[in-house]
Image (cartoon, rainbow over all chains, first blue to last red; front, side, top):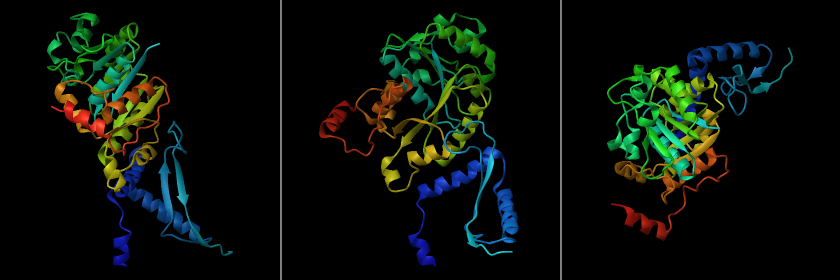
Length: 89
Length: 263
């Protein structure tokens, strides 16, 4: 596991980019990363009642704009939740 | 129709003054009537970058307070007759001027100039508010560093809350060698994060330091940074200019002229 980690290590440029992306989301909408993590866990709990999802690789973020250009659009909450099994209720 | 452009960044030391000096000089070299306004009251620097520090008699605060007419405070550049500098005051602070005074002064200058370029101070306080008050267009300068980009994002948010017709991004001090090795964010990364249209990329070039030492803007000369600034000016005028290949190996002749020029 550790050896695999060594090969997959991110370059510092990538680290900077990823840190900034998270930082700016909270800067822009004044929503802390902790709160976002809580939202993520709650969303995961609700969805899990209906289907089996991959909670480890699910992503959730608030973005101020849609696509290119910033404009004065309302912020929106994006969730990317990979489904593992669509079992019927 | 004149354009009022503010050069801003949030964070200090990313190249606002250098960008202002070079963009102003470049536009003047293209035949435009340009006035550069140093809006950094208390920390005057545009005059030294332009090499005009010995010719200051009156300054921006004198104009605003009515101690002199605008014309008396304007310093004509030694290189281009259509380029002027309105220096800032060194002994006062940001509160010496307010937004409506700036707007009034800019409106007056609009009659005589095609481009009014404001060198904004760092920060988001009164100095920033004064500098952006009369502007309709902005150049946001950033470097590919976490702190500079974060501050740029904050500035962009503040600019968007105002009535700007255009806000463009200048990525300064790029090190292509580091980007290649993954040790610096690429221009694409920066543009993607800030989602602002790109108007120029200026490489980290030691010639910028040399030019500042001499008080001579390097826009338009053979150096990579000089060419990058030239391209920014052309893009401001609406021309489509391809981006420089910053990875190119410098030709023998360029290297030779560079060695001969270096003192």
